[in-house]
Image 1 (cartoon, rainbow, N blue to C red):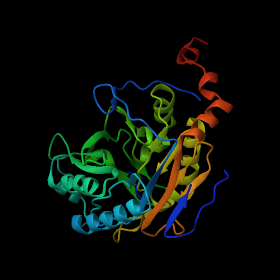
Image 2 (image 1 turned 30 degrees about the vertical axis):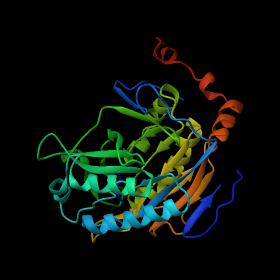
Image 3 (image 1 turned 45 degrees about the vertical axis):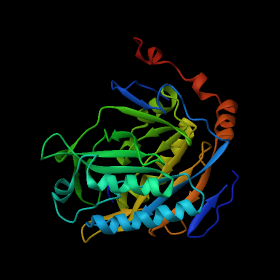
Image 4 (image 1 turned 45 degrees about the horizontal axis):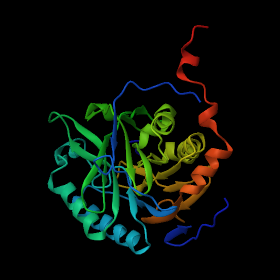
Length: 321
């Protein structure tokens, strides 16, 4: 949790828009429809990304998410991506630990029902999942399908232990267990690479998702600080899209959560050429932006600039000098 193309962009409350690789020593979790049957995709599919200002009230945040789900469904989106800490942002130290629940608890069951009732997939990252002891939680990105079933989960592996220049000092590892698995998920929106916030600063993870596990769309829910967001947010996201030739969907927390914490915002959807195809008119407002995932564009960009064929294998870099 890092706290604080030619396509037209419609400036409305809903914005509508039709290499080095060093292998991680982690397991990979891959989810399909089961029994080896993978989802058949149309040539393009509509998705949405949310922007919101979560507070320390589960009910208030759920109401906001419910409203945004209805907006996304009305706009024809089949997937809505929420930012990190969508369900809760605490005011006081230790509040997140107190409300942390297992994935079969009432909080997540409410969001599963919301997905089922609205017939839409939800990307929920990260959720305060109860950890292995009372002193730790997991920052978990949860994918729910349109039947209300949890399709896959990813626990954030890069924890935000940072002294922000001109800002606060953060120690996410003091209360969070780091994940160890790379996660890819087959869906109607392509093969999804699942990450959370501070992961964005580690390009080797995204290169693993693209070049070793065939991701087509990268999910980056986040809560960047205002300082780091202004300096690096858009640059990092566009770089990840360009170098992997993937769509990037980056749902962001925005605005002032409490007296001590503020997030940068600027939810973005970026295509494989690095073009921004979805952005809210106001980087601090609550709302959604909508765009189409165009699978033919992914294929075209990758065919015309075949970086996957030109990359050096790991053995090339590991050889003796």
